[in-house]
Length: 108
Image 1: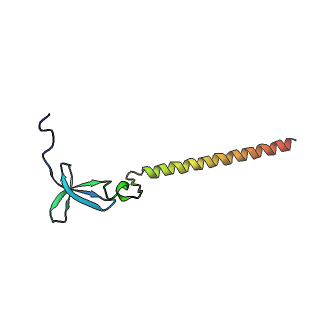
Image 2: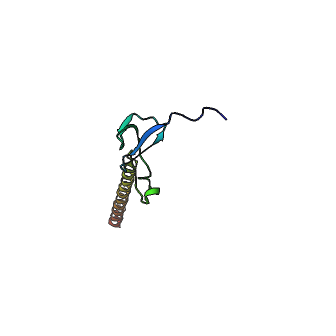
Image 3: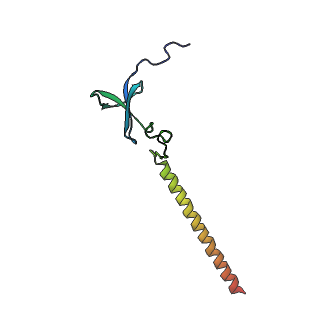
C-alpha cells in the first residue's frame, strides 16, 4: 500500500446549506475562502453547499426543485415556446384548409 496517501490536515469547518438555512460543524480538509462565527463564539472556515440532509428530498420526504443555475426555468420556457409554435402551426394549417375549401367551393 502507498504511504502518506490520506490527508492529515483535518480542521474544524462549517458547512452551510443556504437554501435550507442549515449549518453544521465537522472536521474536514475542504478549502474555504470565507469564515463564519459559530455558536461557540469561535470563527471557522465556511464551505457553502447546495444540498444537505435538510434540503435533500430523500431526507425531507418532499419533492423540491433546487435550481441554482436557472435550468428548470429555461426548460419550462423552451417547452412553452414549443407549445406556442405548435399552436401557431395548427392555426395556420386550419386557415389554409379553410381557404382551400372556400376556393374549391367557389370553383364549383
